[in-house]
Each structure stands twice: as C-alpha cells, then as structure tokens.
Length: 168
Image (cartoon, rainbow, N blue to C red):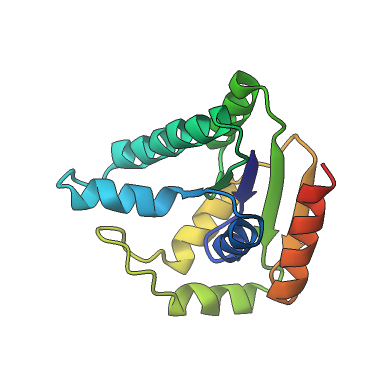
C-alpha cells in the first residue's frame, strides 16, 4: 500500500497519478470521493471527510484482497488520518510505503494554491491561510518515508517514487 502524503498544493496528486499510470495501480484520492458524497446531496461536514477516508479504505482493502497494490492520495496531516492507513496495512498484512511531498519554496507554494482550480463539486479551493493552519498541525510520519520536494522537476520526482516503490 502506497500512501501519498503532504499539504495541499505539494504535488502529491501529480505524483500519485503518475505512479498509478506508470505502474497500472488503482488510485484512491479522498477529495474526489468526498466531492461525490457531497454531490449526492449530503451536506459537506467533518463526517463527509471521514466518510471519504472510510470509502477509500474499503476500496483499497478490496483491491489488496485481489492481490493488487494500491495508491492512497490524501493530506494525512494528523495522526488520526495516518492511523487509518497504518491499521489497514496491518489488517491486510501488506507493507506500508509512505511518499511525502512538500514544496520547499513558500512563495511558489502560495502561488500554486492561489491559482489552483480543481473543480470538485461542493469542495471549495483551499486558501493559503488554511494550508498554513494545516502545516501547524501536521505531524511527522513515524515510518520510513520517501520525501519529495516538488520544487524539483515532476519527471525526476516521479522516477524517484517509482524506484522507491520497486525497491520494496
């Protein structure tokens, strides 16, 4: 199980999509799942976010049971979120690989956030202030982690991610 982690705008979805495409793996991204829940008529709340995590968890578990590796794309700022994937890896008896994306240049990161348009139904674009607030609550992974700085070229980071995964 490959978990992509990092603040919004850190490049994790770009790397997750690239890895999924190159390796032919299913990708479960929590934000589009939550958007679908909201589009169904459920008002966006803490519970829709939690439901999206749980849907991603169940879908990932089903694919793992079929013998497939999976990619999870979600911020994972707090321990509660990280524990969902730790627990699933234990339950399914699979290795947990963490790839954490960041953007070391705050000015570029802020510009990326302010210009980003994802068009997810019912999910507003995140503000720089919210990214900064999440950064303050962000906890470090306890597990070994491949760290990628999206200041580096996407192709370079994608190659590093694939090499990391294939070395395990």
